[in-house]
Every structure is written in C-alpha cells, then in structure tokens.
Image 1 (spheres, rainbow, N blue to C red):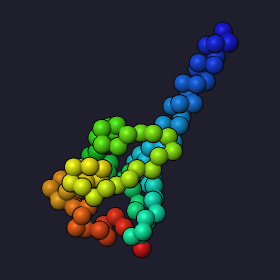
Image 2: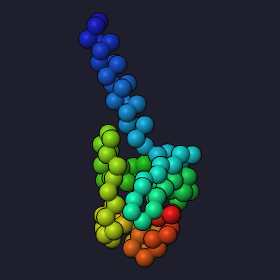
Image 3: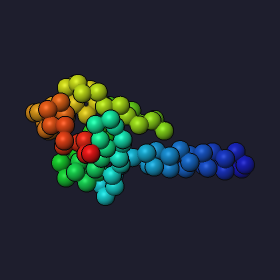
Image 4: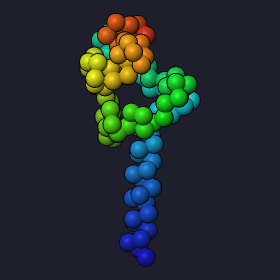
Length: 100
C-alpha cells in the first residue's frame, strides 16, 4: 500500500511539473534577450488553431527548467513555422517578437 501511495504522488508531481512549464491559452511567458523581451502568448497561438502538440515534443522538447533557445533558422525552433510562409518571418520581422 505504501508503494502505491508513493507511486501516485510521483505521477501527480510529474504531471504538475509538465503543466507548470506549458503556456496554454490565457497565459503568456516572457524571455529576456539582448534584442528585447520575447513574449510567447498562448492566446495568439491558440487563435491560430495550434495545440500544444503542434510543437511539443517535436519542435520543442519539454524539459523541466529549460527555456528554449530560438535560433533564427527556417527549419528549427520558432523558425519551423515563423518562416514567412506559415507565419511571419522570424528573420525579417524582429519587432513582432522582440519588444524593447
């Protein structure tokens, strides 16, 4: 019985850590960069009909405590969608993400 309780507590703890890392609809997350803060908006991405699994874990792995790097490549990180075709270009439209 003790082992079952420990197992249940561990599963719940892991689930809560994962949800604390996510940025769902109604929430946003800010990352400071040299070019100004980048705000990731769950609302903006939900309005584009995206779900968490659109990017996780394929483009962005979900690792506790890791803030994703966003190299400005057309096939990696934010540039997988923000390439000028699917969404605005991360390489050309800097001010869309970077706010001073």
